[in-house]
Image 1 (cartoon, rainbow, N blue to C red):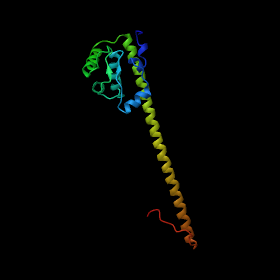
Image 2 (cartoon, helix red, strand yellow):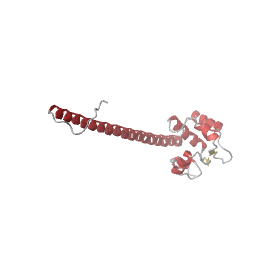
Image 3 (cartoon, rainbow, N blue to C red):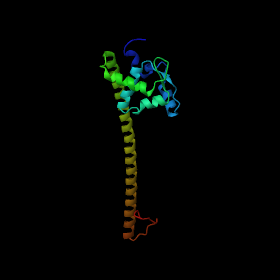
Image 4 (cartoon, one colour):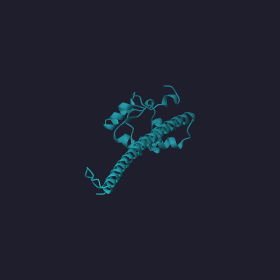
Length: 174
């Protein structure tokens, strides 16, 4: 395996198995995620902690992974426990990151920024759709109100001129 950050610039390099994002999303939605094997426990835990600190994943990720038996240790000998992940995270936070770790953290930050921007864009698009619907509804109501107003104005003019209206009008205020 190549030493350094190059192998860890995509999430699929964190596991020995080849993962497909769409398949993982489907399995997650159906609560049928399969166990995967970590390539590097420290980098995996660091990534998940950063994602949780930016509210991209749930804050109790260690508990979820341990309870659902989702990750096998990089040694391949046992499942990662909450204690293993917590201890690894504490050890990482107690040491000064080297150049490779700093590069890995920069990659994580870049991807988190992309995720957050996509979320904001999706929220803005959703908000824009809601606002457009409201504007269309209000516009339609305004058009309807104008039709009613002009209809009542016409009826009133006909009545004042002594011409009986052909159509029976209902009051808008009823």
